[in-house]
Image (cartoon, rainbow, N blue to C red; front, top):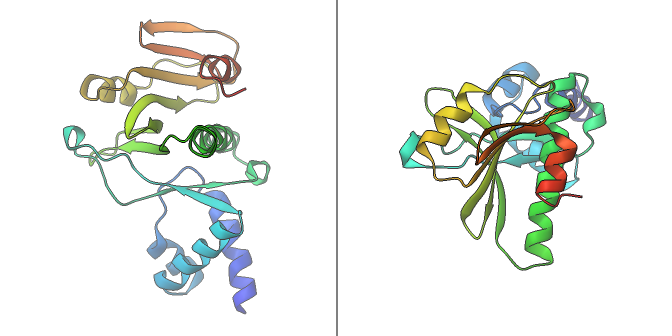
Length: 192
């Protein structure tokens, strides 16, 4: 298999891993290559705006993981799984918001995710000038509150918590915690 064929297989494998923590070792085993080579190829694909990586939000309060990054694609239409495609779309919008704050308004803005050593996870947290502003969990449909959000909300001082979905109902869980459609979330946080 040529290197070009391996890169094509890699892009297909990455489409299946969207929203998951990226394991170079696992990809290397699948492609019969080295993890160093796979890491370099992912860096090249990142440079070519095929994909991007989101680092974890580290906090000693939750024994957060500190290294494993989550992978997303710039063109989320390539993703077949509807839940992963929705999460990727939300990630792209949040990343654009962070880029706007940084490039136009001069703030240091970052998009991260939260995960602790027990595997509990929150899809995204947006930081502005090193302070977390809000956290977002993505669900394709309007469902009950994700238990991981309640867990992290009790431990972290993040002012606003959202669980976004593609439905049309808005529910208030607490004054700082809403379950709402993605469109409403975009209006609330000025993503539109």
